[in-house]
Image 1 (cartoon, rainbow, N blue to C red):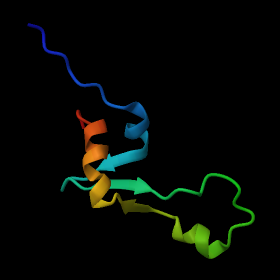
Image 2 (image 1 turned 135 degrees about the horizontal axis):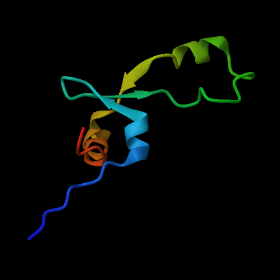
Image 3 (image 1 turned 180 degrees about the horizontal axis):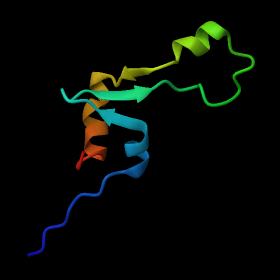
Image 4 (image 1 turned 120 degrees about the vertical axis):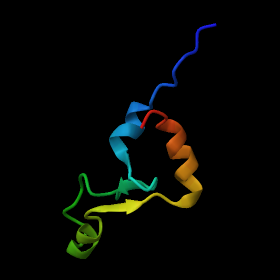
Length: 67
């Protein structure tokens, strides 16, 4: 019987990165457009990456089986 590979969700692959220790990193939401009414402090706070919460970690890893 032929075994099938599980496909990676491409939308999740573009949004998340898995670190060497197994944590999942993400970018902050709300920094793409409509920035002129947001304060510089808020925009600066969305710079860089942050960790995905532990409750969502299993869901994200299920979308990224081959990574």
